[in-house]
Image (cartoon, rainbow, N blue to C red):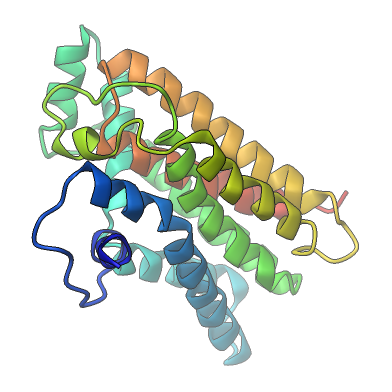
Length: 249
């Protein structure tokens, strides 16, 4: 249960008290159950979209409100990770310089642009999915982002120097655990979009693959894995999955 408590205390603003001592074992279990948190957040997001649109709010505005509430529910740390990662990728110099930029606390041009695009695409996609009655696809996109975190922690890489979070979670997830989340998610995705049974798996696969490729590149650029990379992978997966799920083949 320490892993479950830690997952909710790390990944949400719920008043769940995590364990007093956190080592790699407890952190690994927390990452392992992160998709459970993602499903609950996804259900909450879909419920908010349904309530708002049923009350008469337009799908686009409801989508932006839902994205904002998701950011509040997760302390905005994943969006912060996305911004820091993009600023790090956008700077010149060795990995040490890139890590300094990421830790500076400010948001540069690359980070700001990434935030605008991510929030806009997610908000518009959630609105389009609600208008099309594809409520399960909203849950799917949010949950897929947390599965991407499990996959990123499966990569056989070291933690980035100076990354306390990276030290706890880097290379902690064995491949069977990662596949135990990814494969069922792909299977359930086939049921998320009625009449277009291949679209859900395509959306999830595209999001997860893009997140893994991006995470691998960031690890090489920054000299290891850190929490910002995981946040970026999560947001990239949610964005791509939600956007592709709006398509009508």
